[in-house]
Image 1 (cartoon, rainbow, N blue to C red):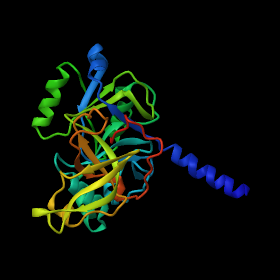
Image 2: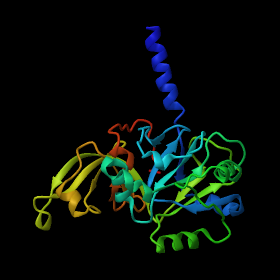
Image 3: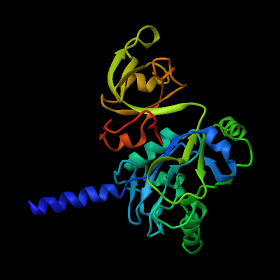
Image 4: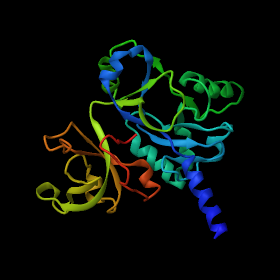
Length: 289
């Protein structure tokens, strides 16, 4: 029994140490109160990854297996960021990471860093720890995401990023120390909202979608949502398995509190590597990062 206890202690302690910083929904009113308190960066539409000083993991804690050339000279301390190539390339990024036969294509990816966990100081000071390390160690596949002062109106910055086919922007309180979990010291701003849900049932299509998926039901907490748009032909012909976690976007809520115009966005990146999912502890403000 004592041996089992220590094994469980190690496992759960290890997982607890992997808790990450998460992004809260955008609060424009809060930002407007003191815009000079914040820095902004582009929200990259890639795969969230965490380097613990020895190995690379997905957001859910699944160990990744990048080729040795990719992680050469990665630092002996933790860094947190996004595996990304370019705008609009999400499906290809996921395919490269999943497919062992595409290992050489990791050269098209970069690990774009937005946080250096467990370091002292404010955001820029923490990022400077990595910057100082990279000045003395050649690691070509690491890139620090630029953070800029919020000197232009938030709406105009977001509009510009969207026009350039970006996903949105991230707003960070520049003086906040490192923390894990979700609060408004780090927020994501988009032209839409998004959440995650678990596919529970597929509904056969009609007309042009005869013989394919027409729509599907998805569980988000206690709500069951019907989603019928946003899917491409490949998804409709070859749908994922029941229980797959997807991200959907929507535009506000109805009077009954249901997502308005829910639309399929993508299969959640780390659900491709792990089938684990639980709605326990989710609340109405929890969103995909």
